[in-house]
Image (cartoon, rainbow over all chains, first blue to last red; front, side, top):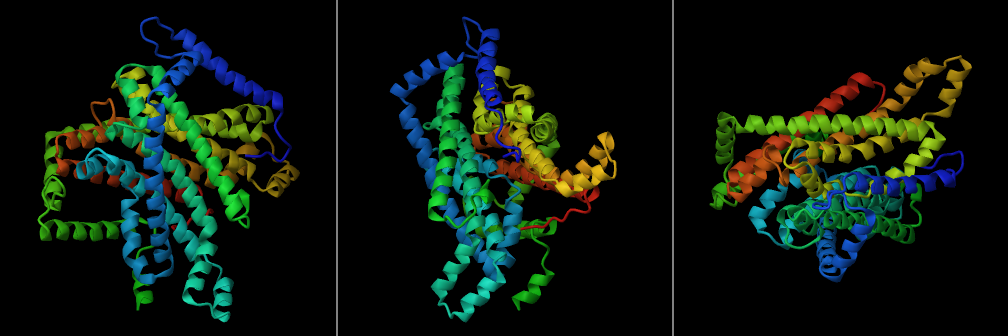
Length: 257
Length: 262
C-alpha cells in the first residue's frame, strides 16, 4: 500500500501508534473492575506475559510451531505435487479438479470435529487440519502457475533437447512465482488453523493457552496468547519474504505483496 | 483422447465441476465404507448420513442451527464489509487519514481472528454478539485492502479524461470511480464472504448453544459421526450458494470485467 506521493508523514504514523495504546488504556480504565478484569491494561498484560513466560509459554509456543510447521510443510508438498499434476497431466485434471472444486467449499476448519474423531486429541488431529488448509491454498496457485507456462519456454526447452528431470525443473521454476504466493498465503491461513484446532482439540499450544485463559476468566492470559500469535505470524511472514528474496531473487518482490 | 473428454468437462471452479466432484467423492466414499466394512463411528455410509440429515431436519434443530449461523454471517459480514469499505476509501483518497489508518490496519491485520474467540466468549457469553464481532473482524481487513487498491489502481488517464470532460463531484464518483474500481472491490467482498463463513463455523465451536459449528462439535463429542458429516455437507452446500450469489452479483454489476476459474 505505498502511495505514489512519497512516504506518509511520520507524525501521523506516530499518532496512530499512540492512538492504539491510548485507546487500550482508556478502554481498560472504562471497563475496570476490581473483581473481574474484563479489559486489562497493557501493563497487566505485560506482567502476565512475564509470569507465563516463566512457566508454560515456551512449551506452548513450541507445540504450536511444531503443528504449524509440520502441517504446512506436508500440505505444501502435497499441494505442489497435485498442482503440477493437475496443471500438466490431462488425466489428473479430469478427476482431481472437480474433486477439489467440491472439497474447497467445505472449509478445512469444518473438518476439525471429524479429525478429532479420526485421530483423537493429539498431534495429528491438529496437523491434519493444517495439511488440508495448506494443500487447498497451494494447489490452486500451483495449477495457475503450471498451466500458464510461457509457450516460448516450452519450445526452448524442447529445442535444447532437455531430458525429463530438466524439463520438470523448467516447469517448476516457471510456476514458482505463483507457488510462492500460495505458500505464503498458506502460512497465514495455517496459523489461523493452528489456533482454532488447539482451542477445540488442544491440551498444548497457544490456542489451548487461550482456551484455559477463557475458562478461568483470565483475559490477560488470552491477550498474551493473541499478541504472541500476532508477533509470531508477523515474524513468519517477514522471514518468508526474506528467504524468498534470497533464494529466488529473480522474482519481482512486488508481486508477492 | 483425454483432450476430447476435457472439452466436455465443466469449466473449472464452477458449480457443475463441484457437482461432478461431489459425485466422484460419494462414489469413493460409498465403495470404501461398503468394501472395507469400516465402523460407523469412523466412516458412516452415505445413506446413514442422509438419514441423520433427515432426522435433524424433521426435529427442526437443523433449521434453527442454519438460521443462527446465517444471521451471524449476515450481521458480521454487513458490519465488517461496511467498515472495510469506508476504511478502504479513506486509505485511498485522504493522505492524512490513510497515513493514520495504515499502521492501525498493518498492526491489527496480524491478530488472528480465531484467537479472538475465547475473548469474545468471556465478553459476550454464548450470545451471537461475540460471533458477529469475530466475523466482522475477519472481513474488515481484506475488504479495506482491496478497496484501497481498487481505487488507487484506477488508470490515471481515465481520471484525467473525466476531468477534461468536466466530470466532477458526485458524477465523477458514480460514473467513473465506482465502475472502474468495482471489479476489484467485488473481489475483496467475495474473499470476505468466504472468510466470514469460515469464521461463523469457527466462532461457534467454543461457547455457543446453536449454529452449524455447534452442531458438528456437539455431534463429535457424542461420537455421532453421521451427524458430523451431515453438518459438514450442509456447510459446504451453503458455501457453494454464497459463492454463486457473489458470482451472479458480479455478472450483473460488472459485466465488463473478465473473471476466470483456476
